[in-house]
Image (cartoon, rainbow, N blue to C red; front, side, top):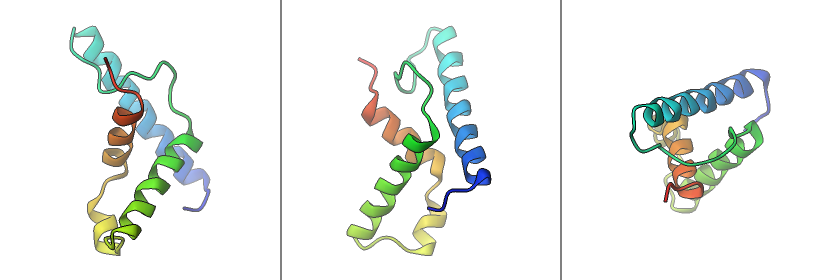
Length: 87
């Protein structure tokens, strides 16, 4: 994945949106989506996406069609839940 200001802007938006969702859930007395203490930075988000792309390639599912069906936000949320589970 190339580094670009547009991609960084998009990834920061995902991070901000998920942080907002977490705050909203928590203020409503519900369980957070994931339990990171700090907002996730762009390099960590890029690493999560790269890891998933490598996984898809390894299992033979990396194709344009597969990549189009897989939303970056869904991948990032799954990875954040795995890395920062709420206990």
